[in-house]
Picture (cartoon, rainbow, N blue to C red):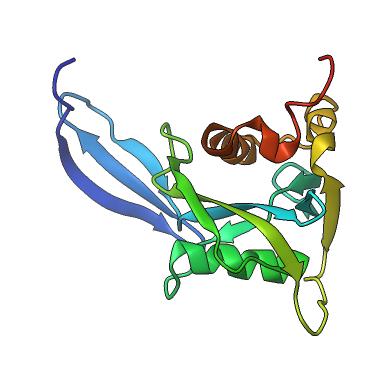
Length: 186
C-alpha cells in the first residue's frame, strides 16, 4: 500500500466544552475532511467475586432511550486512563477495582473521531466502603456473567464500543472469564 496522504493543514472550525470539529486539508482533495476531537474514553469490564458483571443503566439522549453499558466515561486531563477507569466504576456503580488491568487502547471510530477508547478489566471488585449514592439518572446493575450472551442476543446490551471491550477481554482471558465456555446452544 502506498504511503499515507499528506495532511497539509489542520484547524479548529468549531469548539464546545465537550468536543471540537477539526478541518483537515488532505493533499489532492478539494474539500477539507472534518473530524470530531473528543477526550479519550475509558471503559472497564468489572466482575465481582460472585462472577457478576458490573453494569450501569442510564438514559442516553443521543439515542433517546435507556441503555445497559459497562462503567465508562472520559479520561480527565489530570488522570491516567487507569485512574479514570477506577473513578468511573466508583462514581457510576459504587465499586472499587484495586488494580485494573489494561486490555488495550482502541480507535473509537476511524471515520470521524480522533479519540481512543482505553479498555480495562478487573476481577474481584468490591463495594466502596461507606456506601454509594449513584449519580442522578444512573442505575448500577449486577448481572451474572453467564447471562451476557442472552443480553447480547436480546439487544439489551448493544453499545458497540463496549462489545469491543468485551471482545478484548475474551481475547486476553478466554471465554471462561464470562462463563461463556459452559453455555449450551446458540
